[in-house]
Length: 116
Ligand code: AMP
Figure 1 (spheres, helix red, strand yellow):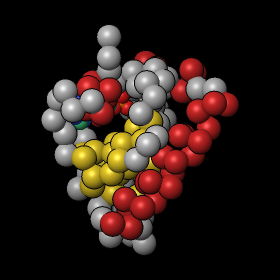
Figure 2 (cartoon, protein in one colour):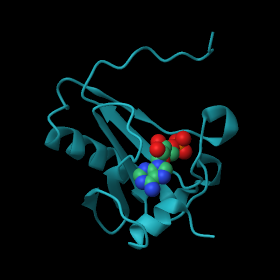
Figure 3 (cartoon, protein in one colour):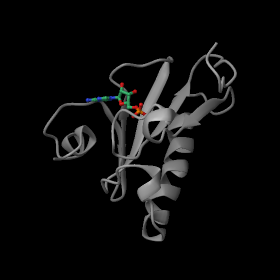
C-alpha cells in the first residue's frame, strides 16, 4: 500500500507543498513541533534508512540541498535549524517512507538520547 507521503506526491491527499522537483518533494508537517517544520521526502518510496542503496544517493543528497534552500527561504538559515531522520521503532519513525524533518524558527533544545 502506498505511504501517506506517496499519496501526497500523487495529490491523492492534500498538503502544503513548498518545493518539488524530479527527485524530492517538501511540504509542511501536519503536526508541527516548531515554528518551521517541513518534511523533505524522496519521491521514491524507500521504507527506512536500512533500505537505502547507492542508487538512492542522488535523491538523498538532494534532501540536503533542498533543506538549505528552504531554510534560506524561511529566513532561518543564519539563526539555524535541525535536520532529523528517524529509523524504525527506537528512532521514533511513524511513516515508513524515508523523510528528513527540517525544524527551526526557535531555539531547539539539546538532543536527549535517554528520556528521564
Ligand atoms: P516520523 O516520526 O519521522 O516518521 O515523522 C512522521 C511525520 O509525518 C510526523 O511529524 C507527522 O506529523 C507527519 N505527517 C503524518 N501525516 C502527514 C500528512 N498527511 N501531512 C504532513 N505531515 C504528516
